[in-house]
Length: 408
Image: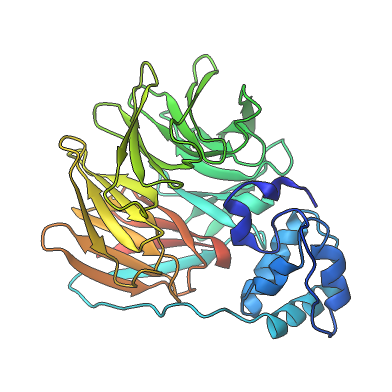
């Protein structure tokens, strides 16, 4: 198994796909114990296994991710290993989802992606109605046709590249960040061919969220590297700059109607803009020092909305005035708001810390919340995107599903 899980923040969430060995827990006796000790300890501490908690389906998904990454779990022992883990490390307690009724009617349909343990990370709602996704642990890009339920997967030439974020250019090419390989990839779906752009600085090891501006330039965050990047597709030129705040962990990104990229700093309480010409970065501190904005969305008037993962808030930032307003999420301080989008004059986001995960709609006019439970439980909805016809595409990482939310 590779050692790339030493990347900050990402590793802790995967448990059995994590950090270099630091210690060894004493695992309970039982069938499967020996395989777990031999396989999981290849790249991380058994303490991480002992601290984890999933139901049987969750552990099966985690084991599948391990196997995708090269863990030596014999095929005829997988069921035994899953049974052992589920019996000894059941789900940890989590806040119950708070369901708030309202006047908006939605339906949520989910599809299981073809490769077990793929860990779909980000969705991309394409103009033709299809939904693309990154299969981060399967080294795959996938395309779902919601009309037929059919899937097609594509695999980048770099093994274990860790596809993460997605963006589509005007010609229909799918661009993605190779989060484990320090590169940007491009897929031409018509030809089925890939082009890869290695980042020029070895420190830029984990490109994260990509987005195109109105001129067709690709911008991206590099979370652990603490950098922002710019790639010009016509020339392949890449430029990188470092965020002024150390360990800011730049995460979600949007572009204003005037072509100015903005991003949130998951490692600090800040929102920042970057000059599209000089790449100078200007940071704006949020009022609460404990705020940790993770994803970001933008309205037609360039007002920025963010999900405060650490405090359980949804927030609004006005770039024109610098003013900030915040509202506590229905699930409470441990609800971990994550994916976020603006649709039909409302802010939609996911609560990833509650069980099951919820889809939340917030009306900025009357400050009213409405919530829905995600049928599969969600398994952490990391990103969402508005479709061409005014619905929402979701990636449900921990349950290996893609979801389409139809807003009636």
